[in-house]
Length: 239
Image 1: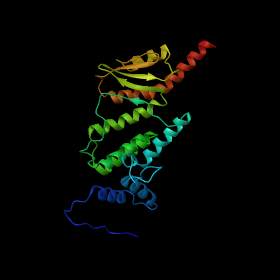
Image 2: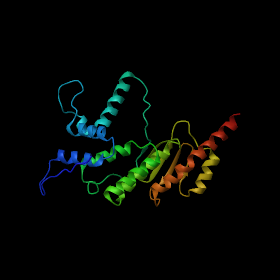
Image 3: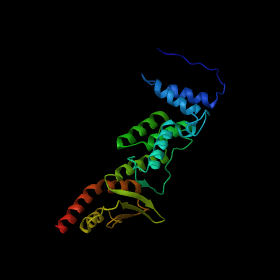
Image 4: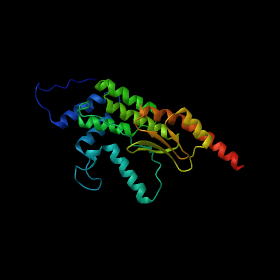
């Protein structure tokens, strides 16, 4: 079945009407009714869980995010440990966001930010990049930076990295507790990446390095093997 939805030319629609039309356009596959219902719930707001009001914070953060925040609050109240997937932080000196000029619709921008926070693998980043290019055209630099930062945050997990930060002169890659580079391995990496300082529990990189984010990505690719070899060396010394 199909339907034609018509509206008068040059007539300004309300924001809610536009959001609902976008939802129908976005979820056109067979069996998408539930997704449309959830999007409608986000648009009109679901109200308080324990009350009669039909408006609330759910309207601003979205149904999925609201449920996620509620679940985290319940786990914290119970004193239980969360098994939530958390990406290491990456604070780098570059613009990384979705510009209003690229995605003018605020709800669409929010939906893509939600997709970006839900990535688990690099193929998820590829899928977001392809969708953005298909729907909005060539990626501006801030969007490219945002996706590249997502990639290095994903690479940070197998590399045992806790955080990537920066100050006025350097970017620093810091390892999780218990992860260290053996001196020999650190020297070997230092020869490969000239200008970078490889210490036991951190790596310092000059922020003026060309293609800084690419350089960090290459280093993160090498770290899992380097840390495994370092662990073997430390164990060999103990035994």
